[in-house]
Structures are given as structure tokens and as C-alpha cells.
Length: 342
Image 1 (cartoon, rainbow, N blue to C red):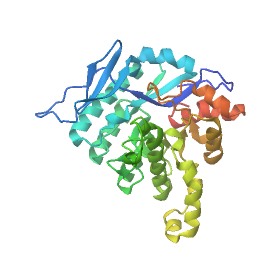
Image 2 (image 1 turned 135 degrees about the vertical axis):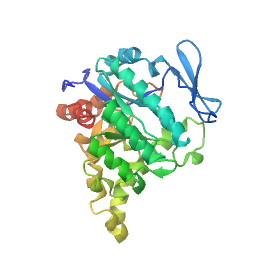
Image 3 (image 1 turned 90 degrees about the vertical axis):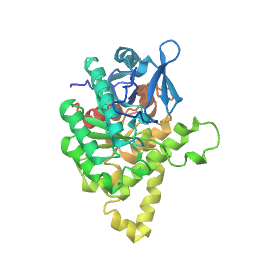
Image 4 (image 1 turned 60 degrees about the horizontal axis):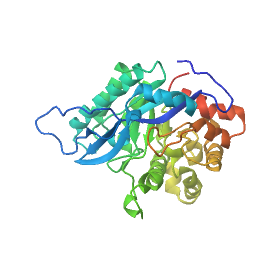
């Protein structure tokens, strides 16, 4: 796929790596006993549907969640040429019985592939795997990479409380690197949710970036990229709290020999080998991420089609970055490299 490189603000050349899909319908469970946590869809108002999880409405979504044509209508005003689409994180289903999750995620991956096929190249698939069972996860990785042709997958910041940098996930992540499949890490079931004071909508505002920061830190402290140097790994929400944690982690590595042993390469150097989206809603914060992580490592992320998304991501980058070449990297080039679209 060829993507035009337009250095100007206001172009329709952006590549969005952070956008989600919920199908119009979810499949019937194939088995003897329907799991209590098997999700479903139900009619809502107008062109909306309810996502039902464990008998309750988890979220109400519009046709933008499943319609390729409706999504594409929104992309030009957003300045987007291409959007990588991945499941709503709650559908990653790590907490489900593994075979049930594998069944659900196979359906999700097929739906994403169908949307991409209808898009004329505007949408590219980002799959999902049941990471609670590494054998099943590896089998689904084969399917999304070899059969569906996806160049990326979405994983949670943790898998039932185990950070994505934990050693048990190394074989799977090594397989991703071997296949040239990039890994996009999204916040999921965040730590610290019980400490929030206020409405439940504080979860994406405060707890998601905290969990993403801890997940990214786990990749640094486990020396994951040192062990799998070809792995392309990105973090949602600008890497969350990682940019603020890095100076403390650097100092701790100087003070505590065990941390120096665990991290042969400095955490700041490692962090500049990871990727991050630009979804921080603040020009000074985005400039700080460019300075901290490098202009080559940041990519558009919108969180479309949910209410808490960046509706003008190219303009957000233009407001933060004066240099045209750096803007072009953030808007197009870095994501093209991450997703294998060059």
C-alpha cells in the first residue's frame, strides 16, 4: 500500500493506529452451555446498539462501530487516509474460558477482515488473540497473519493482572516478531480502579494511562526489547504515565544494582525503541513525548468511534509541532513503518 506523504497541516494523509470495532452482531456460542460472560448485542435507538456483557449494558454504540462506509465518511474530515481497526478492548476476553475466547476472537478477526476488504484500502486489520492460553494465542496469530494478512495485533496492557512485559509472554511476542506482526498495547482492566473517587467515566481518563505506563515500564524492566530486538511494539494513550516515570526509573537504575543488572540498556534508550500514539489531548504534552521518545516513534491515535476520542488528530499534531518533517513523521511515516504499509 502506498501512502502519500503530505508535510502540510490539514492534509488527508494521516494513519490512525488506535481505532476500535464492535460488530453489529456477535456470534452465538457454539457449545453445550453458554458462558455467563459471553457478550451480545441488542437494539438501542436509531442507528445504535447496546453491547451486553454479563446481562448489563456495557456500552451503547452507533453504526460507526461496525459500518466501513460510515467510518470512511468521517476519516477525511479527521485528516485520515488509513485507519487500523482493532476490537473494543473489552472484547479481548482474557477472563473467559480459553476456548470460548478463541471462538469469539476468531469471529472478531473475521469481521475486521471483512470491514477492511470493503474499504478500498482505507481500513487495515489489527487482530486479537486469546492470550490467556499461549497455544491458542499462537494458533490465532497464525490465522490473522497467514490467512487474513494482518500486519498488527492488539493486546491488553495486562492479561488477568499479568503485565504484558511478563516473561511468560516472551514466546508469543517472539513469534510476532518472527512473523513481522506489530503489537499495539491498549489499556484494559486497569490497576488502581478501586482508588478512583467519582463517576465511572474516570476509568478511561485516569486509570487507563496509569496501567499503560506500568505495562510499558514492564517491557523496559524485563529487557523485553533487548531479547526480541525485531519486535515492533506500541502503547496507547501516549504511553500513559511512562514519560513521567522514566526519570525515576533512570535514577533507580543508578542507585540499585539489581535494576542495573535487570536493565543492561538504560530505560530511556529502550523507550526510544518503542512506539506510542499521540492521544494526549494537549500540545505541550505531545511536544514532551516527541522530546522524550523521539519524533520517529509517535503515531496518530484517535480512539474512534467512542465519545472520548480526538476528532481532529492531524490538527492536534500541527498545534504541537512546528517542523513540517516532524509532523509528517507523526502523521504518516511512523505508522506506515509500524504497520508495514511502506
